[in-house]
Length: 581
Image (cartoon, rainbow, N blue to C red; front, side):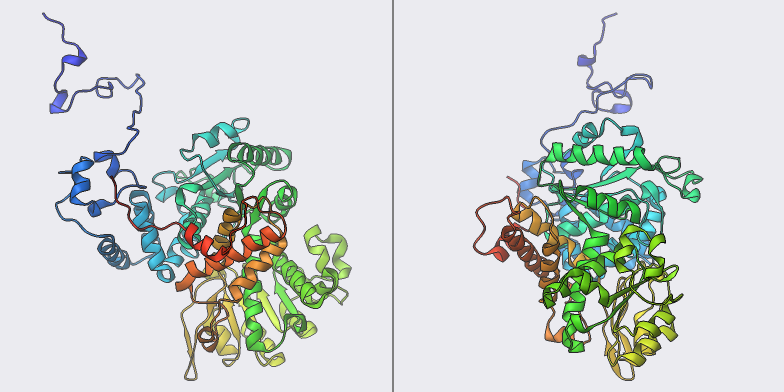
């Protein structure tokens, strides 16, 4: 019998095409090679999220790129695709379903995902990020489909540089990294915290205009202390208790060194949702050697400061005349407090130490005072002032007489009716910021703040709330969302080629955001601008941050642009479809 070789075969079993790479003929014990084309065309083009346009491929493109027959004959433009998808998403009953639909879109058609998000940012931001991303992280193991970032674990110790090189993109400008220990107000979610870097970087591209291909989400898995996850058969991370001490530090240091080695001096590394002790330590350790930014400490501080600066027009008094009381003395609370003190010190030409005396913090043990100093963590000690001990928030309000109340402790409904009424009895226009999220962790709702203050409160929150009607007046609360700051802040660092983050850049970002609040916003009681103009806001923030980088001698991209706002706007990623040759 004549021997038949592989090259003679015209079809394989069941009428399939010739098995060129041996995938069908190989047994389960044999290895195969995962071949891929270097230039996307045909079926592979439809599976490439960066270049896929779905039904928007033109007749010419369908001929040129071998798409005939792979798509229905109709050609839809991007606008109609967007309308259809938005209608579909609105049909879902639960936010997590909408989140999963948007994730699937991002994995299928990148440009359409960002176009949809940019054009409908106020509606979709709570889906792509807080509060829905919190639920997505809690259920990440069950809804996980395909990786959207790098998972680096203790198993990779000694090989992190090689792991970074596995990522297909080489020109990375922004990394968002978490270890999953303090995800929003939900605690330790371990490896499932990946939803946070993915969500943050989606906003870097949509709101700040950083190219999606230049963004890298990273989760560092050192285990979890969440027993529920450790016993969950669908958990996707290491099944062990969290590594701490030297083992943890060595892994993080290897990561930081490998990132700089692989991507250079100008790579922005944003720390996200690390536990307090690690967050402060990492920022202090690397801020002088790397371009690092902690959104929980610095981003939150900048966006809150922006709200306070803009609120001066409603309170008719400068920040230096206010007294601030915080519920929460973690990374967010102390970060905000420190930036407020820095701003007041510059406003009054006084020392930061002197400015801190206007700011008081309450933690789980009560008001932070000098008599507690020996037992306080280092980052709380600057806020220990001379005063008798006070055990609870209401007592602190009565003792301190604050004009501004800020919640960042993640304790839902901590701003009770008695608390709001006490603030209202002291102030004609009490300024109340309930910053904790997701919504279940918010210190109070907008309705509670306006109702209990009899419509006198100036209110902002970390989670979104609907407008509130009280005695014939409609109050529109604004979300003190970090998404106002970090996308534009990151863009400013990128376009200036900054090599370090300086606190003055955070002040510059806050001032730029406050400057975007319009009279129309103020008339509605808002202390932040409308999110619908976020790309314009981000461009102004980027310009202010870049200008400050040039002023401080920290910018590496020379010469300085003549018009930095235009430079920022022209640098922003556009998700509009491109034509293919």
